[in-house]
Length: 189
Ligand code: 5GP
Image (cartoon, rainbow, N blue to C red; front, side, top):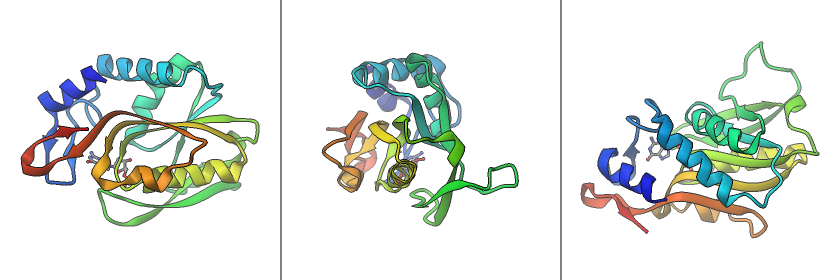
């Protein structure tokens, strides 16, 4: 997606060889015009799928998922990173390793919001080692819903997350694929 790649080149900051900072347009301050184009692009790429729910993970997946969901006319369900008394007692749980914080944590989704008849599109801002997506896929499998696709805004190909989540039956779409962040430079595939 040209517009996204241009924005990455213009505004993203390469923190180191592994981490790209995009908090000035994607996951802290959100550029809604760009988010809207991202939503449109996901809608186009998954237009042949019958989606009933978008599943993401808090916090940075939520904004982009809400914008995208408007194009599908479906609700957004986000996995919570903390259990709380507000949550239903009956929930799906999975474990994720945080790429940015380098620690393991659990994610939770109430069973009443993810049903066997659902057709799910997973959306997230980044694909790095694939742990966040794997956790979300695990929750979809537990619910017996159908996983229709995975939409990623920025994939860092050199961290090989795709091979962790590859399933030949599931369509995976990344809007910008980065092959390297070496020498403070973003290189696209
Ligand atoms: P994974 O689980 O695939 O290793 O990492 C994906 C998650 O880690 C995403 O949900 C995202 O929030 C975070 N993440 C991974 N790489 C980056 C990065 O380069 N920059 C930022 N801002 N977040 C990242």
